[in-house]
Image (cartoon, rainbow, N blue to C red; front, side, top):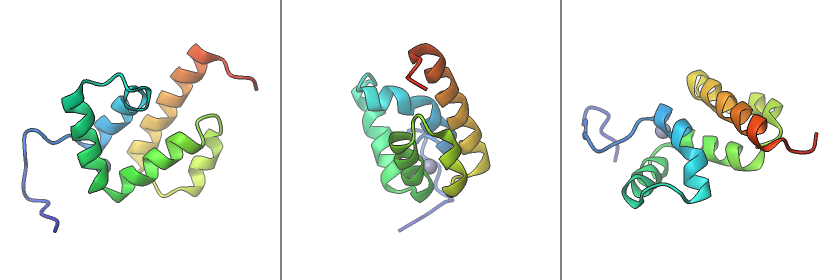
Length: 92
Ligand SMILES: [Zn+2]
């Protein structure tokens, strides 16, 4: 069941997933936000692909081209990946 006309103030948008995903995977999100994010991802195929991409290719951003992720989301993900790369400095 999908009802795109329904606007629930407690829902989060895809663009917010990108901002929250790092903390989500680190387990540092507040419980309510964590659940909200999981709830969103369960009903949002683009975000499922997004999470898989994030998890699987954290150091291989070039692979993003092969994944069907909305353009804006991809931009966000790249920005997140870059900031993480800057702070963690993985072996290149
Ligand atoms: Zn989404």
